[in-house]
Image (tube, rainbow, N blue to C red; front, side, top):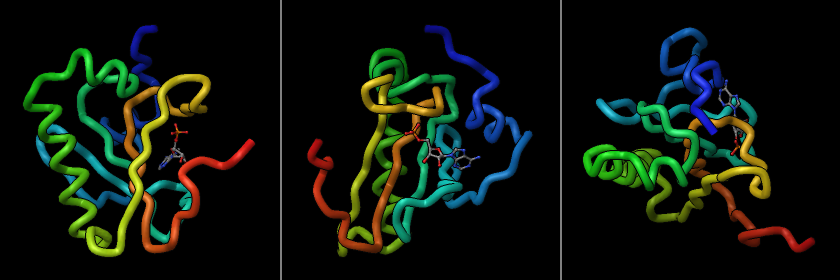
Length: 120
Ligand code: AMP
């Protein structure tokens, strides 16, 4: 599957549509989810054109991977959830219901987050 440059997060990265930005550096952008599932719900994305963690883990440079992981930790600390706890989640592909085909890690926090996965 090829990267689709018309996906919504690619459009945010190009500045074509707005976002509520919380963090940005050379390799990473983070913003509030438009439909929050918790009092804190932030999406962290690499600036590079990666479809998902599968793509990113195989093809991203060491600098991009380091920047991405460090950004997640820094954002959580800045947002005040490093002490209280938070959850990170990245959906890849159909079984995980990935909606947007640009890698994003969700950061959830500021409430008890319940079970890791719902029981079927
Ligand atoms: P996923 O199911 O992991 O692909 O999650 C996609 C997430 O992107 C959902 O939580 C959406 O609410 C969120 N989302 C979609 N469009 C936007 C947008 N324009 N700005 C911020 N978040 C968005």
